[in-house]
Image (tube, rainbow, N blue to C red; front, side, top):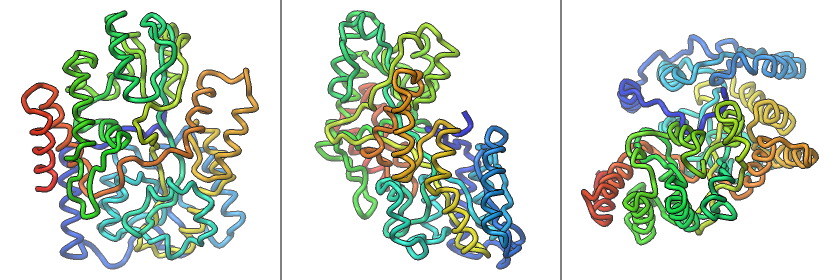
Length: 434
């Protein structure tokens, strides 16, 4: 669906080079004109960029904008919807040329790369403490780098464990696994009794960060306060050993080394895996693509480690530091993300809101459905129920994809027996620190 953003990363090499070039350029020169040619040149206009929300949510945003303009007749909103595949390159170009929009929809991972170059307005200086307290505290922290808050939380998704009740029953498993320790036990039972797999998790460096997140859930600190590798630790060794053991015991499909999360969905829909870690909205796709598997499917809380931590993916709104209209931009961004508007959008888009009040009301609405709740609505209730424990497990940091690459490539080598776990951890540490 248009707002499903888990695992969506731009992998084209040209974009990586563009990012490095532009960041280097900012560090040396102004890389563009000192005046803005677009993006709020009119002091009464706020230019607002979203990511691929047209045409499905055009009516919602037209109504939202009309309501805002009625309350603020001195401001006009210019809404621009940008395709997923183009957003990163477009915002990089706009920021470097000093022609950025006034408010832009990004995710903390990418926005943090520009935050490290002081590209965004520091919200600590302009958002009142009582307003900040309206947002879920762990979610607010997701859009922070050091002591700088660079984004307003907007909509969220968090994974649930979608499981095949029939397949687990065939394996003699009464309930789905809730921890990685239980998952290993279930994986052995499923393989012994059915010849199938319990789970699929990708180790492709360019794909999902689920392995990194699992390490944090197992108690691993990925990097220290100075940004140096901290994962070569007893906890890191235990996490590496966990995934290596599952792979070498053939309790994970061998294709985890070459295929991404989309393959996890395919295998689950084919009835070849018992548990799918994904967003609640995937139940709708399963119902369409695999009705028989859908009938046997239910949702449980996300699998986690001893820490009990659960993943959440965040979309936020950031305000470029160079905006000509910071007051209008902030007023609009706060309007988009207030509790009333977040609740309306979450219900329309099957995502989760990020304020305390809107989440409470969202959960109350699902609870009222009772036995009438569909499978998707039940999964959404599970998803919403995790939010107090949920956080962005892999913190915003510079060169995050390089960290993932160093860990995944060496974990693969350990899985294939090319390196011991100790050698793989040391090699990943050296690669990251270098």
